[in-house]
Image 1 (cartoon, rainbow, N blue to C red):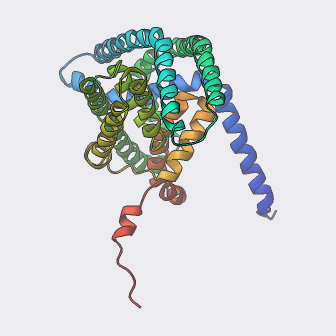
Image 2 (image 1 turned 180 degrees about the horizontal axis):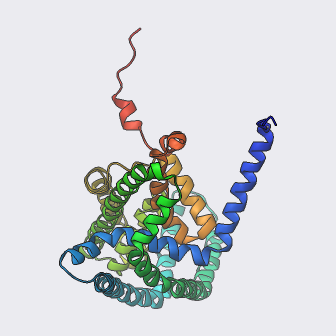
Length: 362
């Protein structure tokens, strides 16, 4: 019997590929309540594994080492969470007064501008009054819905410590499972690739955490010096948004500027806030990221924005924060698999190298 290899037309291959991608994305969306905690747990487990190993090297039993590490992290996150909840509570109560002050400032600005430009002041006054009413009436409901949504998310996130515990406990078992997916003669190569990816991911994620803490401290300290209300909340929020490349930085500065306009007697405070965030962004882009965040993982700006928007569409806020670390991990895996190396190159950023190339002499 002659075995003939069947070659499918390109259109059929493309259709099968698109159907497969659509099915995979649909599954990710449908089971997101299960997948999101698992992804968070996997990333955190990779991040804290060196701490667990540190305790194990001190002759502490593995179970106790994992439990103690999770306890320390839970206490730290809980303390920061309580501080932020306290700030959010005060911010919610002060929101109507912020709206009133911002409305007054807008009215004064209209009066000043109307001296030089012929505008229909009454129309703008009516529009501002309408917006003010909507902000006050809907904000309590909006914040309440967001808090409930966050609370619902936190309830599902309760599973994360449990997942982390078992991922760390069964680390060797999971590693052996991955090795068994490949032929026996590939085991050494697979082991090397997994070890290298683990080290690079740990450095990258720990770099992101250190960057987040430094940016949060700089933002909060600067806002406290300027005298902006709820400086800690705004500083931490700005640091979290800073993890979303390009878009996050622009959004992060907007809220403290609005607070400055609403609470201060002069608009100069808003410019002080803008100057502060510009300075922090400069430090972050040219000092923190090159020296703290692992330089081996470089994602270009185009795909950074695409995956952030795709993550938001798929998993909401959680997807926005998970998108960059996941893309970095995927890129690392692609860089070690020969057929997928072109995709790893596509996701990466070689602009700096291209800029160093000498022009071709004619």
